[in-house]
Image 1 (cartoon, helix red, strand yellow):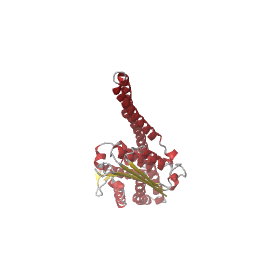
Image 2: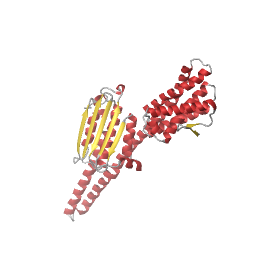
Image 3: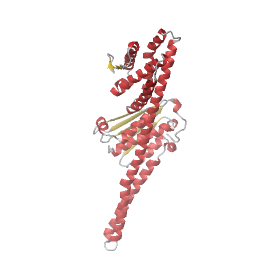
Length: 373
């Protein structure tokens, strides 16, 4: 690669007039992205490199096709690059809308130059020919990137469901099962002491009763969590039912505004799981004494907010140190919705989780979540 004064690169394999033209196209393209404030130019060296490589791959493939050159290697590399772009942008949480904007700028950057080349070669309708060729190449590459983007998010979503099942299993194994074992042990000790030490035997019965009561409470709580259904109860009612499973020492309140009953079920389920995870984190990790949930919906948008008075944490440092299944799952679900999720917190100042979901009107389904209120 040879660096140029535009801060990008040009493949040394290309020389002559086309090598110069593609360098100008690349510089123009990067300038268009910067002028538009595209997050792609500030997403790190790896993303910027992919942006540049994709632009050059598109114009090289179009040039090769229009001027009868071999483009087999270009096509193969383009497929691999596009799939990598899809995964990278999903990982970096760059919304597909940014990829669409970037793709539209390829036309603005490349069309005049390629059309001029065709005109100089005597081609009829050079702008139309160049435009159709660019459109075909961009669509092929974007379809591959979009599939890789969705596949990555679906895989992460499945991992979240698997982690949830593991959490339920751990609760049963680590909390409920030992409580049952303690209860049984105390019942056995009751048999030992019932004749020779009635008072001690009575203590063992009390201990067994308490242990089995604790185990039953854990099992009931897990059963309630696992069967909460947005489809059956509606979004706000499902959240309310979950809040009711928390300790009575924790003060909770839920405010729901708007016609949540028109929210498509797929959206409602994911929003519920995000809110539930935010509440669970507040209780389990933040040791909150108060949790507030607010949900509002209007045409084209849903907003959800979970605020607690717990211990709080340094968000940047905590997320950089290690993987966090709970927070990661919230971000992954938000990505699936194309939503904006923000987690803000400071040690000693509680945590604020806000979710904003764009809702195109064609994704609203009347009465898709019965019982919402």
